[in-house]
Image 1 (cartoon, rainbow, N blue to C red):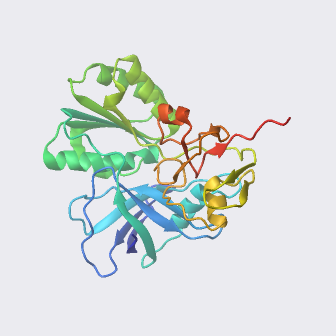
Image 2 (image 1 turned 30 degrees about the vertical axis):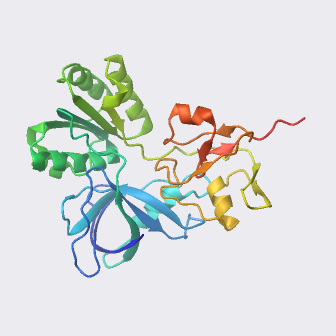
Image 3 (image 1 turned 120 degrees about the vertical axis):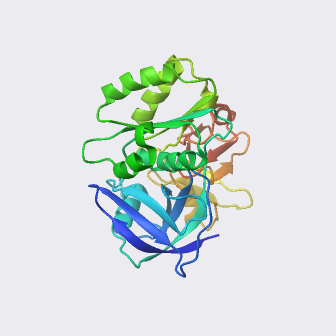
Length: 322
């Protein structure tokens, strides 16, 4: 299902970050959503985008009976070979008030755990966006929560809104060393039942999770919202056969299995095309070539079983010559 939206406001106050307000063309209220949800926009083919794509952006606004959806998008350099990640953000930065867009209704893989006794939110850069949604919900419902936000001076998103919304619940930091020092104290002194949520660049999240692990936090109380896989190498070419199709499908280097399947006329459900959402999961027949898993969705046990892969980023390992 798709919904039609229109751009009703644009905010470029923070360098490199565009905040969009999207409403229903007829002015009707929009569907409520779970805090931490994202909106998947249909990105048309165009400059730097060889094919239509769908990019997911965290919703930052009010989640209960909203009149508008709001997103904030960092303009990224295009991924190698004109990949969709950078092209999608450039497209968003080219939108203007009155432009129409289509999207998949909000959905979440990063919801707050409502049985938690306390919520510790840790974000960096544009990774603040889903955490803002969390904080807004916690303030609304009177839950125990605090937020730590790391950003470069002059490049923080939603800083004034966070100050107004969270008050002394929010701590702003400007350097990684300060973050580690601050978190070492916070993570060691949280009440039983606290859950940790983090979003930001991969290296940042690795540091946060690593520190939590060192301090004895169980993985069940640590939650991550990855943006997507980093720029991937083109990979080796490989071939596949699809059940019910006699053709052998060649997948060149630099082309994803998802793209090859679509080009061959196969319909594969998909959303993020970045190895995060899990929508493009396809089964792998027993006895097939090993899989080079490059997604952020499957757990290690599932990857080891080799019975499926995420077609947008993962590849078959070609048979060795000879």
